[in-house]
Length: 410
Ligand code: C5P
Image (tube, rainbow, N blue to C red; front, side, top):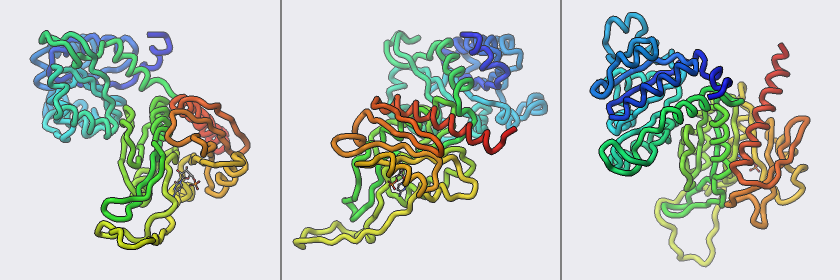
């Protein structure tokens, strides 16, 4: 841990949840490292955790009495569970048992820790630890996937020798590794405390129960942008069309199919948000009618009548308290001219333009971007979309800061 790491965690409120598992002894070391890094740590243990480790160990390390019970009058009088939920800047459950992950997924609130996880708006991370078969069980896998979709960060587990003698995935990440992740999450980033909504992927516009109009967008750029935003500390909701990509850790995904559904999800999510990045390849038109039955091939020709879809980005940009809006423009020629015209027409702050056609842009792993904003531009050379997204996000963060300074020159 460096000096700057130390300052990053200084006085940060970390709620450390401990559930029942042999790895709970490692959490004592984690608590020690967090405290040494300057954090204010409150340990909350489940009943089962008490079988593996004593509360007095944590109390000695953190200087705070361990909380265990939802209805403990002594503690509730000092800091009630709702106050504790508000106090936390980050909740980390380590180790998180299979049982706890299942209860978290189900939204149970039958003990203090699960209640705090429900009641708190703080970001939540879990560090699972369990027998490898339990980890691999489809029930656990489904719970973990659902938690990821909700934006819960899942750190680990590591592979290796297990307490039961088995070899495989299920070991708690080492305390030093968990400390680094906490530091990265809480301490870094140009977008800490900012909220963002990102759209990604294609939309599907149904014709009948089995067919749709779609496009070749892979969603890779939008997912990479969402991931880069999270890494800079933003709280990200990703409204995604159908793609075959995993949800990036820490991102909340809302899955949609049609442009209309995407619009609704975005408008639901965008209130109070600081940044909107529209990466989705939204279909410009949808079939006027969705036929109830599969269309039969009886006619030689078939006419489809299409109607315009709403322009989601333009709509968000026109909202009264709108977020900083970033759009994408895929052009086949005169990139700068068309992109700037589009930026103005949509009334957005920034546009990232790329050339398409001839195998560029869609369905590829790399891309190049020309980024334009009021009074500035930057060319980001061809590279992996993940790297490109990181650079784009740093341009966005700088631009947002510059705009905030102009609006509030103090
Ligand atoms: O107008 P055009 O489709 O070229 O604009 C592309 C930009 O606008 C992208 O950022 C895309 O995500 C967004 N867009 C949208 N809703 C639409 C069409 C495009 O948000 N219906």
